Image (cartoon, rainbow, N blue to C red; front, side, top):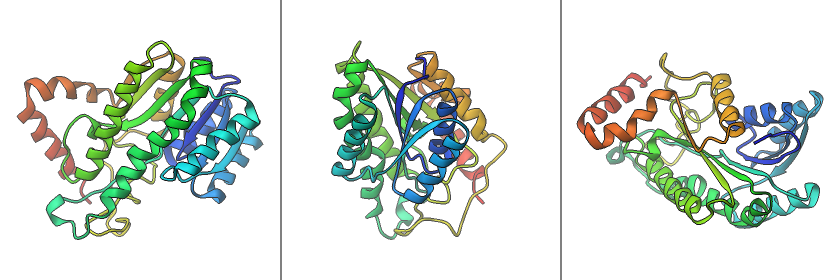
Length: 268
């Protein structure tokens, strides 16, 4: 996919991976549509892109709301006349054993954001993506492929998204292309500090430091953009995550022990 002059919507574009992807794609000539709830941050990202010679269009969007997603697509088409790409990046995480959670109501927030938010966007964007034979990119996670300690609700929402997009890729074969990005821990994002903890609130008071195995944001973005340009259908960042499907079938106990160890190493 040559991204120059392509209209690409990016959810969760106000920070982290979404912000970095917006800037990188704009630098390559894409018309980026930046979507997120925080309009001030969206305007900041958009202004930075424009100041560097790029083209950006900020649209305040809560992807949990179907009407917001409908307006996101309508405004994009009204301005540019088409949609070439939809990057599903917005998401929320958690960090707590299930039995320790005091209030499980935030599980619905995880599902509404990580799964239904993507469903909402895809529902309204599909007709226009079919017209351009466009691409849907899912910024997913290793938790979409297996169970993960302290991430029960997050893993469930990502499993749902994985199943949904896998089905769409079958139903829309040769009409729309799909890229699934399986991510490990990435530095310089807000995912950890916004993660839910034991209570129904962000776990900002108990931030965990990344280990040396965490990937730098710039390296992550470089790999995602390269995968978009080279028509990849799935990439793993870091690459060692590609072993998960194999280990899950043939060495499940070993995989689970390695996962538990990784969780322990990522405690504060």
